[in-house]
Image (cartoon, rainbow, N blue to C red; front, top):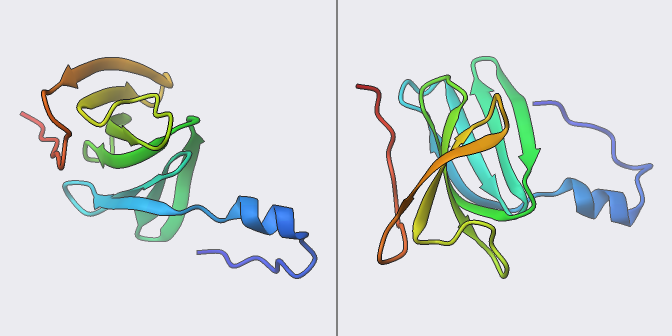
Length: 117
């Protein structure tokens, strides 16, 4: 993890750099983990520890699950005006940066897990 000297930053830059984590989930082999935030999600490698990429998708992500080290993610939204309702699992191909499917349920999704068959 890289710690940057923020002493020269203004208050606005410092506040924008902070992201509130809404969830943290490891992939199936624990080689990566995904963090859902108020504006999107961030993917990290565990060995060596480093941010792989971050996506600002303009909505809160309450649950994010990654399928192994692939570009396939499952997202559940949250927030005041979510793009993704809390009762839907949105399937995303992050390489193409687009949604590829959705699963709708009668009540809010509380947890999910992806497996490879």
